[in-house]
Image (cartoon, rainbow, N blue to C red; front, side, top):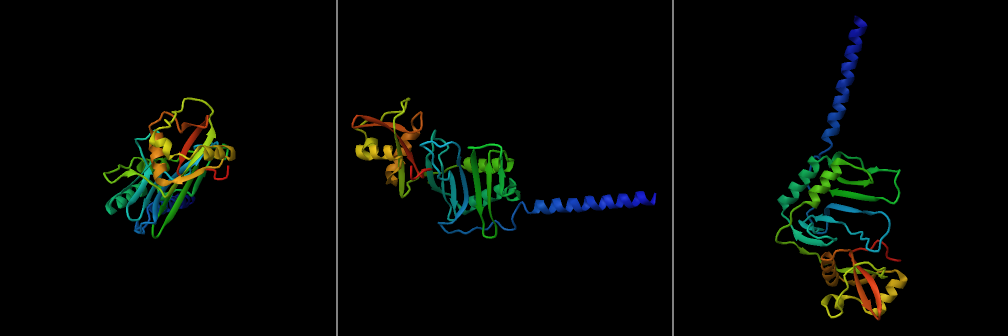
Length: 256
């Protein structure tokens, strides 16, 4: 009887210790402070997704960035293909978003979740930078419900009247000789055609497999034009040759 009582007490103590550890872990899921740097160049929240087998239209730009002053650059949820929008949200909006990310369990996650059995797959990263806590979670070809919840918060974040097409300082077009298909052919007399590099530059880019740098305003217009097409990219005929052209913010491969 005495031995049984001792074992019971020992078991109870072990359970209490385990419960304390779990409780301690839960407390760490939300930082002590969600304060962040409010400067305009400080990235508070960022979402990036990419990888997989290489394609000429690969773009390594982040799909969501929220800066300390409330500036937000995010993918256009209404666009068929990647187009970034830029706008402004209030300080209260930023705090509310951080609260929801914390409630989703983001800060309690490990730094990475990787399925080592799959090669050439896609991955995603979510980064949150606070004054007292900076956390980045990398996920590769596996399902993490907290990341799914955090991603949904970012991708579903509503825009407002301040949002318009994002115009970066510069952009790029990736060019290859046409492989056929049903891409839209750009009218040579159109404004879009006038924004593109000339026939010599297109030919050189296709042969070298190196992207051509263009100004940001042209890229924004090309991206909006592309977003209205059924397929990624569009076809351009120059000097009797048809090229497939892909406007990108940040090409995956800069050197071919």
